[in-house]
Image (cartoon, rainbow, N blue to C red; front, side, top):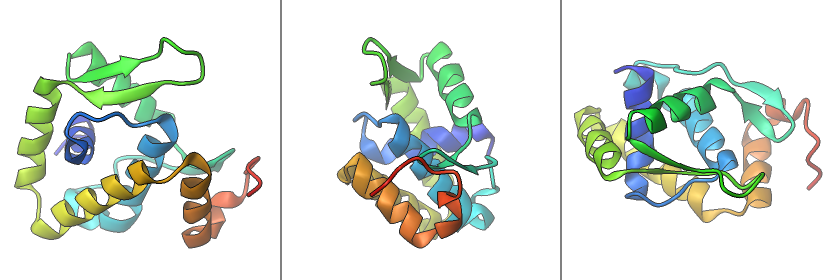
Length: 142
């Protein structure tokens, strides 16, 4: 599975609902950190940054998926970007998800729900609690 297909699979449990930048970064981090061996990863090189684990490559992949018509990138509001799979992206993502090991599928579904149900503050705090090394360059005070 290539990186773009992995991102589609990771986003597919949301069923086309939107992810914020922090949600997508933390989702990719959790999957890389926890199930790389099940999905042929890691796909990214996360580093501690202002709000925890960050890799700018995640955004490059999202831009590429948008260019291919698989992702809707909403950047009309400054500092309020959001990302959602288009119908073609969702179809491709669900197909890719279905090809993964059942344990990976379950973890991806749970992780997608986890990142989408938490506020920015709660999500960053939860990541710092489990991965304290990712707090190293933080500007976030909780």
